[in-house]
Image (cartoon, rainbow, N blue to C red; front, side, top):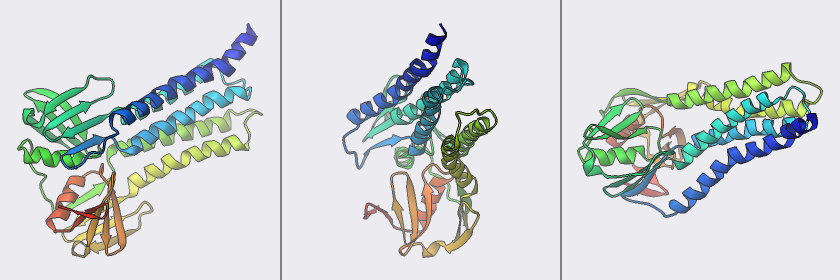
Length: 317
């Protein structure tokens, strides 16, 4: 009986954990590759969750799945079924986040919207059918009559394109231009970074104080390495800031160093998939993610200054 229990912990649990965690992620990637392989442009585009959500989910799944698979093989007596289930729960949480980020998709085809939310039925509607769009501090909520049809956070890729289209259709008001405002990381990035720092740091501390002879320096180095990325994301989210004060732009990096530039000296803005890069000549002075707070206000301010926008080397009107 003891032999079977030991075999379950060492082989069966890791195998089931690998299939349960990575199966949904692999299936989601395959489905998305088939359904959205076509290239969209113009009035045909896609809104999707930022890559950092997908990668945070994958990292979380890897971190806790590695513990579920490797630790039993070392013969660690403190690694019981209860501990294994706890690790698996966190790995499953990471898998859920990754699957959600991969499957979440809104496809815009001229006046038609196809809304795909994970674990919900696909919806199709026309922009003309939308009766109300309410702006929140972190995004927008669309209604048909009094029924909520979708909620989009401002960190979503393509958020600005849809807002512009809804504005042109008379469904929402234009963002008010402000002379003084700050652009900083959204609360979602800060919360996710803090959660992963606590989780990865907590397991490092747990390993240090409750370790046995099977835990060596390689384990400590591996766990410490898993702390670097979430710690970097958290510090960057808390410290980085872009501030507009009348005609001056102040850019502060993650170590707190701040530089000021005249807005009139900005020569171009390069548009990337998940951020924009503000340049003076050939010098890149700031990179701003689309999910930052007050990102729409920044775009309107740059547009009002007649600063040219470029995407893949071509001017964007």
